[in-house]
Image (cartoon, rainbow, N blue to C red; front, side, top):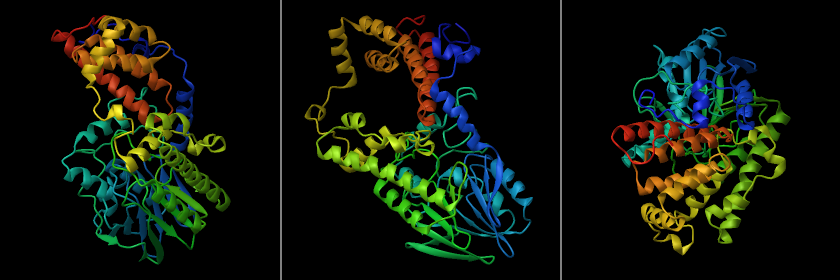
Length: 463
């Protein structure tokens, strides 16, 4: 034992912990190359319009007006916001007259107080701001916080957590819960309906309702300089049509429609909620059009398959991005994943029942595990098969370990074996949120195995 952890940790985590020279997988190579998107910089995207990237995890922008500034989105925490504000102050010392929050997620609102400072700027959001967070809170749901920590990789070290796909690996420096919505970071002004106009410091900015990643999303359109601030309806990755921390259904059709409206504005500059801006009218139109068309293709294929009676498990085998779109870097699954989107669309329209009557009243995991173990020749036969599959089929190892843990939740050896399988799966996955979730769960399984071993849990801890 080493600090309460069994010595034999398995090949994946052992290599990470002792710094063994292990060649990067293709997924890891791509994620490391992705770091270039997060180089810290303030970019002048148009005359008097600046976007800060690489300070926290999201973008913040500044529009310089006649006698003041408009800020769009305020970073994940006050430390990141202070860095952005200091960089903006190198370009202008005019007071902040207005702040626009594109939606209620904490990674865009957490630094609000820094930009407010001692002034009294207008703080604008869309009516219904923070609806996603309130919906969860009103139900009394809290598990999404634990799942959010796993998705974000907050418990991982800097070697394990390469980045979050659309943002650098960042550990927020803020107190209190790190949920997606903080009640104190609220607008003072709300626009209702489809489109509103903000006239501040000689700047006319249009705020447009744009359902997508959230139901409170807006985009901000600066028509005289043709700059569009998209919020989280665009970033350079296949989007989170579903977030594995747990979300209600994100209206994919509405998201597609919002992207069409952005295209119709004919922007010269596209500032996403994460990653570096896209500049040039033709390039912006091309990127937004293909982004929209990719989402639309997955939606249409999924609906067509549902109408044929396919289950979610069957759909993810057949629904794919068209090849010409899948090869585009800004549609690669760095952050979201097509398979998760397919499952979310199915559940959003038809609910949990997949149409197979065997699944109306399925066996409990423990009952099914006992029957599978009997077929295999006992629990130890399952364990032997799980170990044998680890090198070539870690997904099967993980699923067999699930059955061992259904038979005995304190099976320390099964926990360790599953942890090894999850680490192996993580190294091959490009989607950073899934990689983080795999590795964080593996870390937690090893801790649980140590506790089970100390308390006399079953299984062979040295396996």
